[in-house]
Image 1 (tube, rainbow, N blue to C red):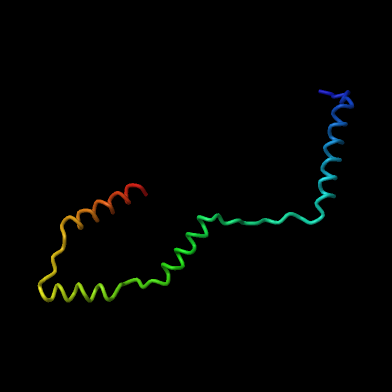
Image 2 (cartoon, rainbow, N blue to C red):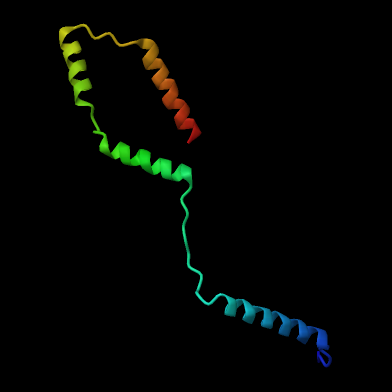
Length: 96
């Protein structure tokens, strides 16, 4: 197949786009740089994570108090609280 007639419209459209691109490049003398913006929620999460890192992994005073209660025989765990904890943990597992 031989194409003999392109028409001036096609070439003019190409030239117009090319000129437009040149103007955009000239107006933007400094190259664009990538940038990152952290949302307010993200900043809040960073604050919480920093506070969590400062907290100890084990609350030793709580562990010692429970050990003392168990040793003295007056530790009475609440069945309701245990059941609530199990159910809450299970709901978190299913959401993930």
